[in-house]
Length: 173
Figure 1 (tube, rainbow, N blue to C red):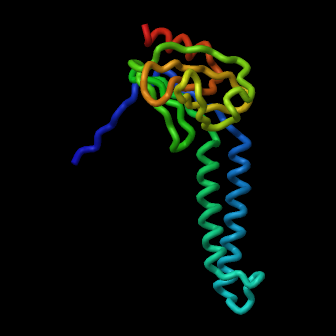
Figure 2: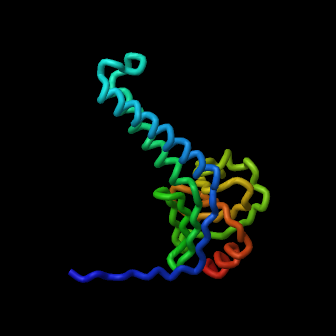
Figure 3: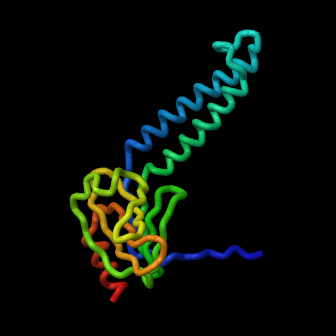
């Protein structure tokens, strides 16, 4: 078995931090550690249960908070990648890829505010079809108009909207 190295032809890549989500994840991991501490204590001292709470409760709480912490940690930065194949917007494990053959055009919105219903990954409706948004606070967005598929638009935050719009313009001609 041979190891194959695959190189992507990356034209543009940008990481847009969503800093306060990293702090929120740290807080959630701290709460997870607290629940793990309660679990260990209740297993070592079954006669002195905290508020008569069984050990399985602390285990469930630790697992739930660990999952929520992991989920929040996925949103610590938005990564925009443009290759010869298309555009990808990604928050951790959650990503949306659109090939150039499906991109009809782009628009820049310098002041999106809460226009898309908040920050993170959002779904909305425009023209009778869904659109998907990957955005962060205080950063302009680029809207890619899509020809077909589940979504009518892919919207994502970027610190360089004109540069991305220029790249998109070159690829969809």
